[in-house]
Image (tube, rainbow, N blue to C red; front, side, top):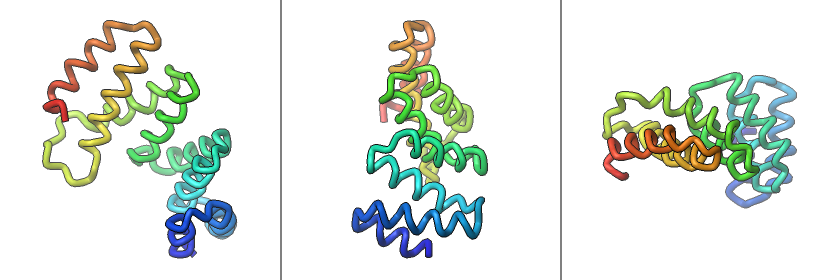
Length: 144
């Protein structure tokens, strides 16, 4: 069934992604892949509340899922909830300390992009000291 979800997603059939993901979740309420697909499909349909709920479920099951943390942060940032966005970007930042630039897991890129977003969050919140700190940390990543 997850293969079907992937196929539906590739074909931009988000209603089918939602339908099939819900079937999977009915069978296995803790299926991270189905919850992630559900959140993504809801996001594509601009159903923000539903997307956030699905992504939060993934986060509760796997708080180290950097992709979902980043998506939650971006969603909150776009909604103007900068403090909530910063929470998820900070979470990724805390997982990325001491990363080798050759990390293949994608965490390096998420850590770097989270710093960029944190700088924007802190600027929007008026915390220029933290924004400047993020700018310095971004420099450690070589401006990548």
